[in-house]
Length: 250
Image 1 (cartoon, rainbow, N blue to C red):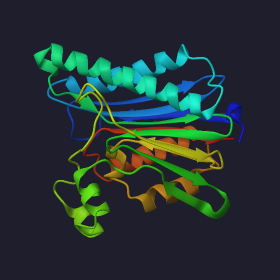
Image 2: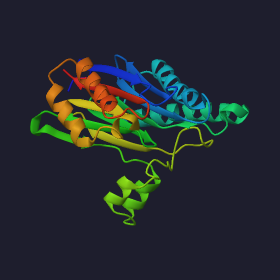
Image 3: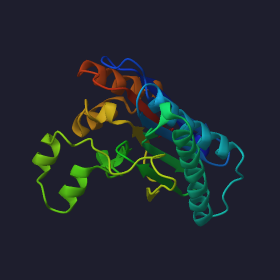
């Protein structure tokens, strides 16, 4: 896969029930590396949208000032630096003004390099890949939620996890503390499409539906495929803000 042939596209929608959109969807279409980003903010009043905006804008600005990483190791160091910078910016504002107290945001971000892609995850937004050959659809990230942790420990079943009223209680988020932990995945560039999305999509559209929509639209324009995913979430209820960023090899 040649990263110069990657197409990037993002959409965000307030949904049908929310009064404001606390999601941010971002793209970085650089010559040396490319990135798609989703942040799903949380906090009272407008604090959630402030946190998600800071996260995405800080990362994109940092990328624009960053030369091409000479190795995967250096790319990982670059990501650590920009994620930490975004976290610090959110946290400093949160503790400096009462109206922003307690704000935070999830973050899922994919960075495509020459031979591999790095994926950062903090919270319960998700990243998926799809490959035409074999119709291979894979969830890359693991939700950093209480119920996901209990399930991974064998304390609850998958059915109990999906039905729990606490299934969206986060164990981790950006900006909540002065330091941040995140999962970092490295995958080979053998996918045809990479999707990052907020839980406004995955709560409304099952993984099976997402896979089917991608399969049906993979040969359409990237804008058509992304809009179809968003429209399906709205048709299924649109209970939350919905955001998607897509990276597709053409």
